[in-house]
Image 1 (cartoon, helix red, strand yellow):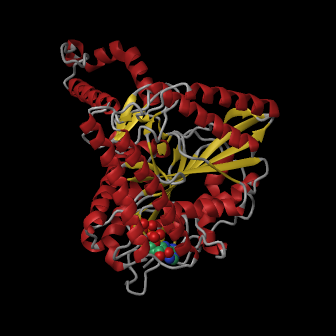
Image 2 (tube, rainbow, N blue to C red):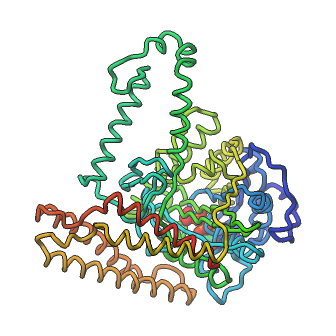
Image 3 (tube, rainbow, N blue to C red):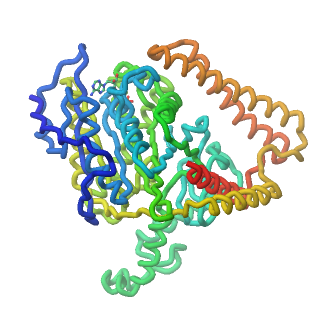
Length: 564
Ligand SMILES: Nc1ncnc2c1ncn2[C@@H]1O[C@H](COP(=O)(O)OP(=O)(O)OP(=O)(O)O)[C@@H](O)[C@H]1O
């Protein structure tokens, strides 16, 4: 028997008029369970969710998109108003309704389609953009096979790193170059596993160093080079703890700063009108990697993270706050979804990252001292949502049918563990800039100066001094061809979307294949030419260039905001 659903709270007021809740420093992650109605081929389940755990909200198969929005966002919006960063995360097995919840059913974002089927993201954006004195923009990334891509910038690769650590770190095979206050993305890009460039070698050395340090710490040695064991520590933990504590505290605070992960350099889209909102959601839906399988003809193969930035003018300053919406890829039993080849490899990778997320939640629930955020790109980027400063709502999506009971129990157990996690939610609305025309002029002057400085630096890319100009030219032509193909694919996908046609168009599948092959070819060509010529055909951008380019992107983003 499906449980009785609690009556939905009445909420018709706008974001600005929400009541102010107390600003508790501890925030329990709110967990809702949404049950997808069984299809005509499925048998309705007799399972009672509350046999596994009692979530904060249960959304029955008949709960409309409208009510779901009200139920899942009431508290969250008031937290946002009070200055807390917030997150909404949809979790569940493949085909359980995550994308339906965040975006809506397939093709519901067509210009002429009714808005009643829209999911949480378009509804939230609509509510925020109609709030007076607030300026909204958004970025959207996908994590595909543990790498981050910018969905609003032609799926260009993004780097994931720590904010302000001044270190070079690695997220899988994404090279990351930190520059003190900012990380630059999209230029270091994805490197092949065997790449021996300066950045990758730095990363490998650092990883080795970290491994040695971990092993030494496990053996109780203070000196991680392994030369000096700490006798105090070996004899008495409490004595050594008191001796080490100032250093330990400093290291811990450095580590916390270093663990503040983010992608940098992704495109920000200003949102002012209904058309902007639809454009954003459709671009994200069309750019995401999807596949059709036995359970879902539009199955997401990547985790999608949309960050909504809110800038609010208040007493001469502009205050900034964020809301993160996450549509996770679904866990799946390969035997049941019947996927083969590339889709199977994708499923394995998805399961791997969800397992990493499960380990993080388990460690948080058990209040363990070490939480393995670093295990995957997904857990790095969700660090704030689960263990940091954000107020988070997780929607566990389950299929309301008998044949998925086993998967449903597994998802509910994840939700149960999450329900026990307390985040250290703190209000952190920060003044980012004053909004006057003088500031705008100052920003424009700073931008022009930075651009001049950048032009005088060696930026990397195709090396004009390489001894293979013909190959460099051929390579450039390939890149141009790839760009044209991508545009053609985008237009075809948009036409398909507007016509309301469902997936499986062979012409689009063929175009996707061509883009994929050409992307791989150009990547391979780049490194092959390097090796053959013995010259740096493709030059890595220098740290100084990356830093300057990052500063330019930040100023440009501020200018977009101040002009809105
Ligand atoms: N609450 C609901 N009411 C009606 N239809 C639903 C509901 N939830 C999901 N569906 C439908 O079920 C199908 C699968 O849903 P959806 O694509 O959202 O699943 P998913 O969890 O995102 O899957 P995947 O992880 O494979 O991407 C879609 O056609 C969707 O419209």
